[in-house]
Length: 501
Ligand code: IMP
Image (cartoon, rainbow, N blue to C red; front, top):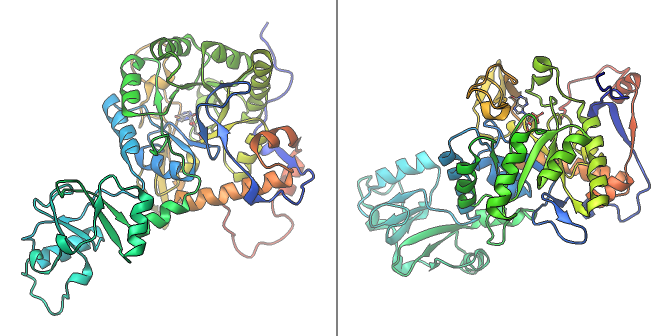
């Protein structure tokens, strides 16, 4: 006879947190959201932490290098999508690793014989008024001078006049050596009242520009997530087919953590992949696995050597797996059971394997609930797809701006490896849809608001860290009637207020 679970499975919407005592020191500013990403032994540190418990989904419509940089600047991690060629995924990873916050490879460069007319056109095209003058007009040519809008007066000068006649020449410029640290570069900028500082090598070739405004924004990212070489941390998706080629390329490109991207993780394909990585890299390369929704699935992946385990089947916003195949489990119930399995495994073995709640986060408070229920961190797709930094088009639909968002199991992504059960190399039926989500602006602003709600709720529950919150949280199931009570009710709204999700 089939096994029947004794309880129905529930979603986040069906739960609420009950506040606990908060002391005077329980202020949002004192809350730390630092969280382990990969497994560790009792009494030791994890090899990788994030400063906020948010990672972006392994999806074409969500995680490319631009998203990865923006999220690492806020303290989280993106997992670059794996449903692309090995070369292009590795190139995205290496663009993140080579991005030096505050050090800009100059994108507006001219030659000494460029005319004022051309300078004005370049300024209009790029929006940048500072231009490097190099011998060959490239970003790394020999630096001969700098042109800014203070060097010319359009009303008084001929458009045909050449840059060499009005630029600030090299011998009048303040420059610094290529290996100058960002802090020292900033001191030079401040001491000399500069707007920009060129860094040059010993042959006078331009290497980077440092701008006053970029340094200010860099300093504003106090939670940014950096590796030991001060490069942004980035993750990448892999699959259970081409790992022998993909993993070495991603490791070579500098990926800090990998994750097997699959709709269903309780499979021999995953244990084979984990075994291969462990044998080849002797535990130096960290790999998460999933997704699972119960204790048995967790134990299987834990014993197979996963560094973290993702939880969730069928709860994603673009997911139609439950309709197509009838498999899945309410996300909250799945998470609660897997969190208990993680704690049980920790008791038994002294090994703590972080779990990630993947998919189904709709409201900001769902993030808080998922953490309270035991998630160490959360993976979100729809949430991040709405921002400027996601790789998809922003389109105007009936007067409202939308961003495109499609599932990895949709005909558009054709990520057949994610649904691979050892069959043909094709997607035989869809498990995801192609959709729009309302455009929401910048990642920084939205994430800032979401996390301030998370911190504030943690304070209501008397907690200053995620582990403390997981111990102290009191959670209640709510009846269908009290869900109605939770929204504005029995009043006539004057106007639709903006509901941040
Ligand atoms: P969301 O945050 O609710 O949009 O869910 C994102 C999660 O949905 C991803 O991290 C994946 O686990 C999952 N997912 C991505 N593409 C598909 C799909 O096409 N079908 C089902 N689930 C998907």
